[in-house]
Image (tube, rainbow, N blue to C red):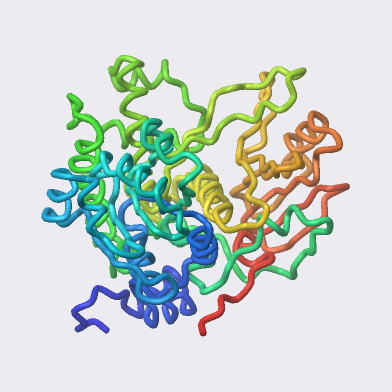
Length: 450
């Protein structure tokens, strides 16, 4: 393994950092063979939508996934706009470029030529055959109104995040659907421990970062990755002054992960005017580096905090920005925000393929009662999730969930405290304490490898 040209993890690293099962899975499936849990949803969209866009950050595996589909399940011609010749042809004559293509086509990195969306709309209006265009984008077109509106009713948008814990282990997680089921079936004691959870947080979900043999090599990868995003993709999206300040802003935002967004405080800390700060943060969100978790406000009779929470899109990147190693986190006791960020993103990943497809919020009253994560399904049912980094739970850990239950009444389905202990424990009517690894074991199905 050590002499391989491919940067695959060595055995000693994997035994200590991700576990032997995941190592064997990665060794057999490195770069492109991993089953992505959103695949079935993507194929279903291609079966009835003329245009399907797979959105997500660079290096999450979008190109690998669509190339695989273009060869097998959805035969299509593959073209990438990272090819300067392809990009030049599109910019010269978008309509003529599309007219010269026969059959289904995959267009990778579509955000590099936004003018192509209008030409695609005209083509689709002439022929609405399902699956004509499979697009990928490393910029969130939902934040570009002119682009998303140009294909309204013609395009389905899906998101591909970094690898989930289930994808790494070869399973399709079912936690989200399980917690919305009529009866929650508790599992036996967890085999996971706090150190294993910490390793998962530090490694993150980017395939390239996971494949690096040492922590220093992962840091080098994240450094190059962030530099590329901020110097290339952000520049493509907006011609802004002060581009060199974005790395500093991103590092400052990392220290605020899993906390309420306070633009006044951030403006003072960064010396950016609030208008500039909001524009910069929109660009960071557009390129999938940061996310916002909005406040739940379903009950207008209560005084609730309306500010969103800030979330980094990958905890491996978050740990890099914080300079957080496993040893330092244990020594300083700073696992809390990292763990909450990790759980938010694991749930967001599962939401892209779950049957429930819940909306995600946080809950906080003006008096300080809070619930870290609120899931709400299409019928308005509520599941509250509180995150605790301790290995034990007590009645005080359920205070916020009880307040959420009081506020939401009959809509409250259940409340869950996810903690780093090993036992699944009923804790009163509709309340449960569950080990963190229930996120990828509860309701999980083994992927079909045939």
